[in-house]
Amino acid sequence: QVQLVESGGGLVQTGGSLRLSCAASGRIFSDTTMGWYRQAPGKQRELVAAITGRGNTNYADSVKGRFAISRDNAKTTVYLQMNSLQPEDTAVYYCNLHTSGYLYNYWGQGTQVTVSS
Image (cartoon, rainbow, N blue to C red):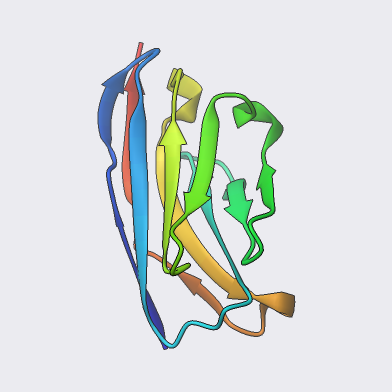
């Protein structure tokens, strides 16, 4: 079992920055992908950014050049640096950890990010 604890959400003005953190605990395999998804009211949950155990990254087109995902050396904490935030970035952000093929797939409880115009 893996637990994911997120932190760093909050309220920020347009153009501001926030940094989200997600700490994983429990039985964590080395070859796991960690990432961030978000869900705005009335919309489906969507991938924001992900990073594999080897450090390969993937971003949604809407956040490329503004957000940066990183992972600590122990591969148990993932960060999402969010710059130039826009009102459309407002959503609940969820941390995700999964193994290849989604044999194991875990979610955090979510953290609210609100960008005011």
